[in-house]
Image (cartoon, rainbow, N blue to C red; front, side):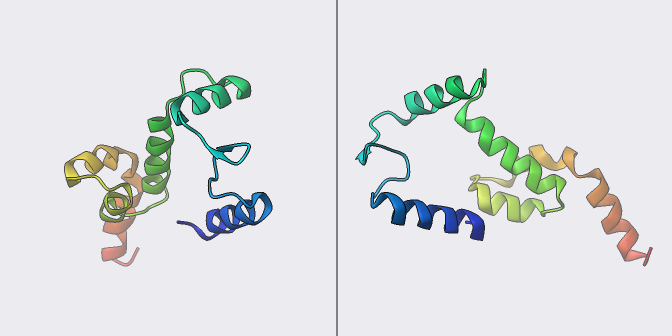
Length: 104
């Protein structure tokens, strides 16, 4: 968990005095998917799925030069093959690795 996210969650917990980050007047949300879809609708976001957020996270990590191994660990994929799907997003990272070997 990133430091800013941890700070945000801690602040929410202190301000709401609630066990749940996503809650309905302090009570646990029974159907997160429905709540997510309502939030998307209210924000004007169409065709966004919860899994899309995971995909964006993985894509941004790889494009920022995070190794596929670390990405694999953070995503919790069972095999590295799933994570390798993101390798096409890192051609500049691969080129830099080769250049670094030769001191360029």
